[in-house]
Amino acid sequence: MACAASPTAWYAWLSPWLLGESDTDRHLVPLGDPHDARIVVGHNIGYDRARIAEEYDMQQSRNFFVDTMSLHVAVNGMCSRQRPTWMKHKKNRDLRDKITNESNSIELAALLENKMLTDEEEELWVGRSS
Image 1 (cartoon, one colour):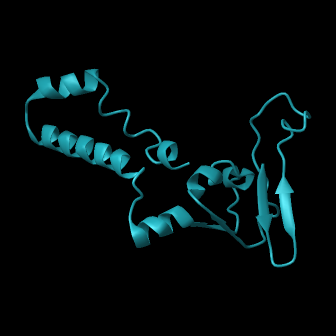
Image 2 (spheres, rainbow, N blue to C red):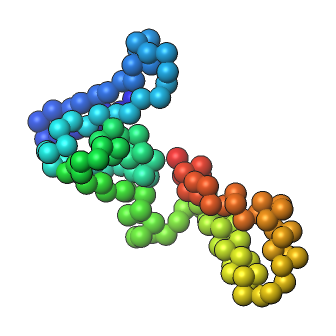
């Protein structure tokens, strides 16, 4: 489901899957003519932007995005639920930097074997903030 508002109207989009018109739940949200300039405002807009049809078109659209979560972090800092994820990421990044500056490959091999360095990279903020 998606909704939007303009100065003169409001809009809603329902996935064809929710309406029973499709067997798959994988649908992209169309925003309309890519030549029309528009500003899309959302909280953690990167998550939503990945589900917008025009973002996968070779022709560049005139869509612009404002992320209210980024604005909040810039003004007020991270919330208490985001801080542990950030601290884990920072600790792993610092450890990786330390290991790459040293020549001890046994320690690096152990970290890679335990997958401590790969889990932090995958969708760091999406899981904690959405």
